[in-house]
Length: 116
Image 1 (cartoon, rainbow, N blue to C red):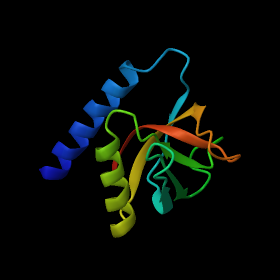
Image 2 (image 1 turned 180 degrees about the vertical axis):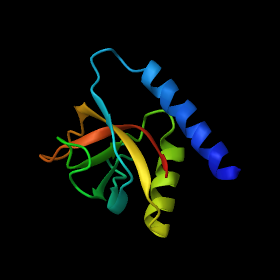
Image 3 (image 1 turned 90 degrees about the vertical axis):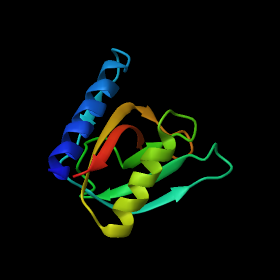
Image 4 (image 1 turned 45 degrees about the vertical axis):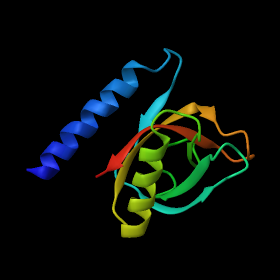
C-alpha cells in the first residue's frame, strides 16, 4: 500500500513539475537508474552534480544537476543521498536544455526524481 501511495505522490509531483515548466523545455524521463557518485559544491550555490548507471539512460546528458537555489533542493538532495547509500533504483526527469555551467560535461537540470 505504501509503495502504491509513494508512486502516486511521485506521479502527482512529476505532473506538477511538467505543468510549471516553460514551453521550450525538453525533459526526458529515465527508466530506473542507480546513482554512482555525486558532488556537492559549497562555493557554487550548493549545486549538486551526479552520475548514474546506465550512463546512457537519458541521451544528451552526462549526469544530473540540482541547483542549490531551486525549489525542492533539500528534498531532491535527500532523495539522491538515500538512493546512493542504499543502491536503490530511482527515476529521474532531466531538462536537456538547462545545463550546469560549472563543467564542460553535460549535466542536465533535474526537474523531478524519486525512488523507483
